Length: 277
Image (spheres, rainbow, N blue to C red):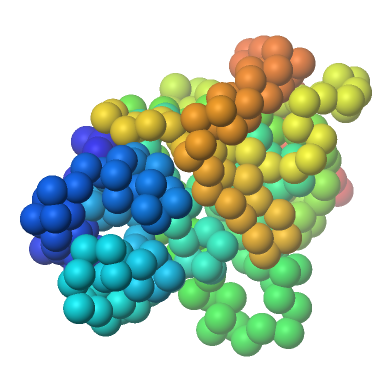
């Protein structure tokens, strides 16, 4: 898998290594095991590398196919624990291994780009009755994801932001100004590429919602689509290719990176004036 290796002593990496040993002992290829599990061979490879979790359902099937006497069913539960919601946990794990991430955000800033105050407002809107401790933990986990950008080059992050993301006021003008200035700084430091899809573009290729594409050093690309408390991580080559075309069409309809930066900074300035009025 990619250059950002998991700790070989991590439970997920160890369980993946055991899967590889058990599969090879049964003289079965990754593709062969994947066929029996109704997943792709690359999915099996990702489980063996520890970049994708072995779910309880797959663990039970693996035990039956490889004759491992319940080993994977017994051990996958603890390994499957994640600090992220179930619908996003698998995507967060592979995101940390990606060489490139391309994301379309129609409603809010991508989580990896959200400053603390913006993220707090988003989570509070999702969970209006949650305790402050719960919100604090959610925000901390989101900010942990942003640590991926501390590496100066990897992953390469390219985002298309719907203009709605800039115009929807999350937390008030001061919070919005801070968030957009944060994006602008990352752009100006050449750490990320951002394009804005303006309202004037009209109908576009991803009217259905969010889209994230991830590529890896030596594994097939993945696509992630997300709705309200639901998400799908997709590895079918035809499906990923279709989503890749969707993203390409979005970038063709969006403003150039230079025009996008100018718009982001202009809107940030508008919010700053409003906050100081």
